[in-house]
Amino acid sequence: HLREDIWTKASNGEFSLSKVSKVCSNIINGKVTNKKDLKRCAEIASDMPSSCTEVVRQNRSGLFPVSDCHQLSSNLLRSNLETDFLDCPSEIDNHLFINAQRIASNTKQLHTKYKNKSCKNIPSKVYSNISFEYDSENWPLNICYFDPADADDLKICTQNINGQDCEAYDPNAPMNSDQSAKNILESILKESFNDGKKVACQFFEKAELDKYLYSSGNNCLVYHEKKNCNFLNCPKTILLNGKKISEVSFSKRELRCLPYIPGNDEDNAISESRVISGIVRRIYATSNKLTCKIIPEKKYNPIFLEYKQGCFILSPQDCQSYACRKRIIYNQKEFLNFEYQGKLGENYFEISSQDKIHSMSRKLKKVLNYEEEKILSLTKMKLWFKNGKKLIHGVGCLEDLYPDFFMRNTFNQCEATPFLISGTHQKNSTEYVFINTTLDLISYPRSIRWNNLYNALKMYQHIHPYKLWALYGIK
Image (cartoon, rainbow, N blue to C red; front, side):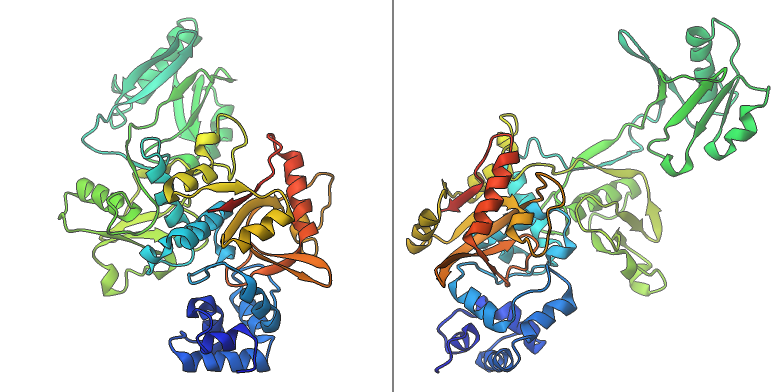
């Protein structure tokens, strides 16, 4: 009862279990469910302060090293941040999503909707739903596929001052057919690029270029690169009499595009898994009950009975975002005629008048229904937390926030990094703030000097087009 650490206070009921559950679960190597577990955690943390550091070393899920149990206890006692959710910054490529999800989790508890999701999926899942709700009509993410019901004719197009002139060809027609790509292309080149003289084209893969380049049998060479060529699109290079003809191109197949939100979500009609399930059902005319599930590629093994039938969306091992290319397997056969289009490319705060409606900050404010207030000084920050306000968010230069981790090697170098401030304290006449950047684990707030934060904000302001002081309280 005389201990002042947060681990003991939590076991005594003075602090919420959620404040320490993630760290304690790692320390005792099991889920914390009762006071007995908390007491065991408190004993280990007190007797072996380095245990809080070592569990992060093993997981490699955030910036390391982290505070030991004594320092971490002091930080957590003063921090207002909710930390009761899965977190692994090192496995996520877009760190804007991390800060957005943390704000959403602290203001609206949105992470509770995705209890079965992995720490890699929660940030993109939470933010994607926020972004889609903000502006569904201009949603950029689509899955596009070739539908056999659509016209199968492709086109060869010629660029001119009036735009494009295109002629259709049948990709399945024999080479000597009038509707083949060879005959249509030869006709176009003869009339527009060879003064009406006969053109004879040879189609081949780029690896054979040397074989045909010096032969006299054809005055037209058309080649493609195997790695860039598929059923949907096969870019080709055209050489006529040794000269590259860039004005003529082969069109892509016409695709049907459907909006999607990344991830598995049976409750969302446009979740990635449900959209792909609909595509597979249409292409293969299968049962309406068929569902496709996203799984790690390394987990899929057709030798096992559970994978011999059904639909699986295979996510690559190094996939850290929604943008990675996935494979679709239906009854052990791969479906290739689809592609992902679009990306969620936006700024945390607006950088121009054209980008204002697309900034992450604006989307969060509208959908989560909170207001912001600019925090211009340490005094304002202290009043903010004293009045019961919970969070402050912003963007600053990583080299100033954590100079011991990241050195500045060039003039005006700035790795702009989102962060959350969750409290302040004073020690030996020096002012400190508690911070979680998107490199840090949410359950491991760090204590840095106010001067470091101020310098990070000033440097970011210096390079920002609007000269933005990027520090706002959320209320």
